[in-house]
Image 1: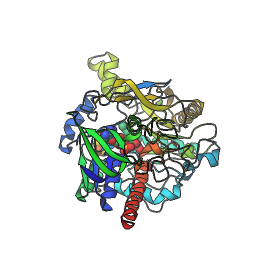
Image 2: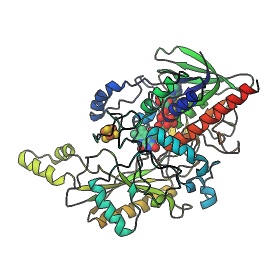
Image 3: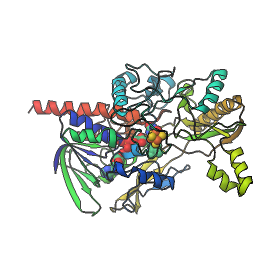
Amino acid sequence: MEAEVCIVGAGAAGGIMALELGRLGVSVVVLESGPRHDFAERRQYVRKYLRRENPWQSPLEGQDRHTIGGRVAYGLEGRRARGVGGSTLHWEGYALRFTAGDFRMRSQHGIADDWPITYDDLEPYYARAEAALGVAGASDDSSASPRSSPFPLPAFPFSYSDGFFARACSTLGIGFHHLPQARNSVAYGGRSQCLACSTCHVCPTGAKASTDLTHIPAAEATGKVRVLTEASVLRLEIDRAGAISTAVYAGPDRVERRLTAKIFVLAAGAVENVRLLLLSRSADFPDGLANRSGLVGKLFMSHPSVDAIGRVKDNAYPYRIGFSTAMSRQFAVDGDRSTRGAFLLEFLNSAGPKPGEIAVASRLTGGALRRQVQEEFGRRLGIRIYCEQLPDRANSVSLNPRVRDYFGSAAPHITYRIGPYERSALDEGKKVAARILESVGATYVGATPLSPAAHQIGTHRMGADPRTSVVDLNLRAHDVPNLYLVGSGCFVTATASPPTLTIAALAIRAAEHIAAEMASAKRSG
Ligand SMILES: Cc1cc2nc3c(=O)[nH]c(=O)nc-3n(C[C@H](O)[C@H](O)[C@H](O)COP(=O)(O)OP(=O)(O)OC[C@H]3O[C@@H](n4cnc5c(N)ncnc54)[C@H](O)[C@@H]3O)c2cc1C
Ligand code: SF4
């Protein structure tokens, strides 16, 4: 098979690039390792999810296999998804822009590195990404950087329990505002309004944006984009000129097939992009494709996170909304980020045990059980703290040749730890959260154990210098002229904000660049 552009992965970045390139008249084949999850099956998927099964894992035995090392366990179960839509099938949908300062850590705080682009460079692409994903929000975050257009959808109203936090933040002088999210507060993009059914990791209505709904059907409708599912790319091969000529892929039958293209885009996520590069070693690239810098797989980051919990006397009525509606970004922009990480506060609408969990833990029966559930349920308020993580060479994605996946390829190995920079951010976040909880009259109960977010960042960073980065500011690999690496692997720093809106904005920008390069190549014959 042949295409002008081959995209590996139909998740956030791959789905968005496919639509942009298709609209710009470029012929694209997308190779997606997972299946096409039929929307009509979503109710069955919700049932599975409620039984604590993960419907988004690979159906192929061992395909998601990976190993973990380092002082903090970073496992990938539940932290990524396979299939058309990728991890946006499973994501929460929080869609924040980074701030202008997030791109300037070295210049402003003397730490980590600056990005090779600025907020202003990305701003128009943020606006396009928000429109495509349908982001609901309000311009009430005083720490946000300037916007050229309003949010496409109105914000979700604050919840009942947000009222407690709003009053406390007002008393303490802490910023409190809506949480922008790619979820329909009103019907939008041919998708339903959110029905507040609270199973957002499997949305049965399509109100939560996922690229299987927002991008792939429109991409295919351009007539330029073809999506092959259950097509796992095993390696990329280069020609004598040092460009990639072929993607070798296989389906469940394990038979190898080949796709040739002019340009290849890896959009398989920050872990699988690295694995593919390392699996594509050759005489020209003995340490892995596009890895002359030695940085492929290095500087892995996430967002270390904990929940601070308080107990209240009156019912806070949690679990009526499956997602959070309010946050504070004040501590993600202020403060001296040279010594401790920035952090976000997410005010939870679902804190504390559910009735069934209270009942099981109580070991009571009859009237005593009923009273216990009535007295205990709804008496918790929670604040989630997400902190910024510094790039650290000890954190990495590598290959584990002793463990093999369904196709016999070496599995990814994640090495992860957090240091004093992150720990002091979490400690400071817990102090702020405890003050807020105490101000609403709650007794501070404590914090949950550390749990890094489902965000994988920084494994093939962008930069101007090929010695200190893997891709350039257009996400083209420094070492291979027809290879692009998209997704949060190309981020220079993690910031405290979730990554996907920035992934989307960068993907639109990279697609424009590829289409312009192809048009220029055609003109020059
Ligand atoms: C539970 C959960 C909650 C989250 N919540 C948020 C949130 O609120 N806000 C936010 O910003 N982010 C959130 N995220 C993260 C967000 O989903 C990711 O940042 C985003 O989807 C990454 O986009 P991507 O295109 O790089 O990778 P993905 O969306 O993961 O897509 C990669 C695709 O590549 C495919 N693939 C992998 N290997 C191969 C191969 N060898 N051959 C072919 N195809 C391959 C995969 O099957 C997948 O479909 C969440 C993630 C999870 C799991
Ligand atoms: S609460 Fe809204 S976004 Fe979440 S699953 Fe229900 S309809 Fe979808």
